[in-house]
Length: 443
Image 1 (cartoon, rainbow, N blue to C red):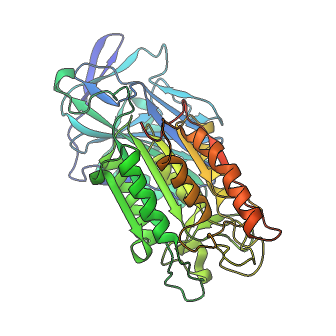
Image 2 (image 1 turned 120 degrees about the vertical axis):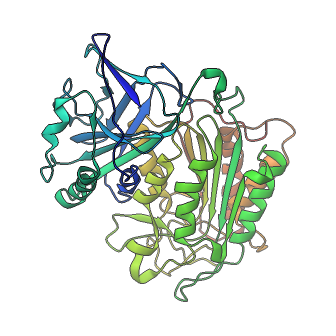
């Protein structure tokens, strides 16, 4: 239960609710929102002991109406915002909304039950009217009964075509000494790696590639042998294992469960990428992706950005070896014969930049080529060009190398190889760097 104090006097403790156990909170999910929301707390390790005060903050990249939900360790659900001290739930783009607000004279103090708990921020473009949200402003924290919970979920999806959400988990413990989730270690915690390489596709209309699964295998080998990633902390998804559902479960579910704030996550992708026919959305092509149904079967840009948000608090390095334009040169990692039709890397930049703007940092993307270029397979047909030089730089390093130094080293090597081996073609490695400090690849 959580104790809410006003003017330093005990007000209430939340009652035990029905048997829904708060499952609906996780089910409120929008992977296709055009904007981003971020919820955060005031402890970087997100571990709270008995009697600690919990301070929450929320940001949105666009104007909207904020509803902040809280689920405790046994499934009780409450609305933290709006509340009787913060009745106006309109949130402006880029504004930080603190809960509780300074000077509001109430605190959220940690008490039993202890365990894994969730905070979820939902921002809708217009106020919800399907349920009586005025009830939320009558108390500091409003317990949500099962019926109201289900109606809230329906209301969000029914009333507004564009809404966004973000959730984080906190750990509550009886005492600081008893915490099973210590603060991040000085070297950045544990390291995890996911490598995806797709050479053969289920859809016969998508050109198969010969080396992408080898790219993934070699990168994972490098990360375990040179970059401090334990073999037990790796996930390899080659070819038929790299379905959209498996990729979703890996990034959105398994990684958040296996990692904690302070850890480092390496994410590598080698394969096709593309762009919708209207040119508005970019995607990466999973094993079971279909040209005829991109919106439903591809790893879309906004979807990927939302999944990466689940790793909030971790250092995340994303390396993508895929084409932007389906170049017509031999050995280009292409899927069509029309330049400009395949452009995945812009999606990683724009989505992560959006998330960065609302406070999520410690993420960087190293892309194999710019938006106007193809990414190539080596003429030796052993590896992709970008992957080959990443391996050379890290495996051949006689000293520590950061992710920025890696990019600086690899960029001219890739450019030179393409110039020497492909007529009138270019491939330029680019990086978006939002790390708070350089990530050492090989500590």
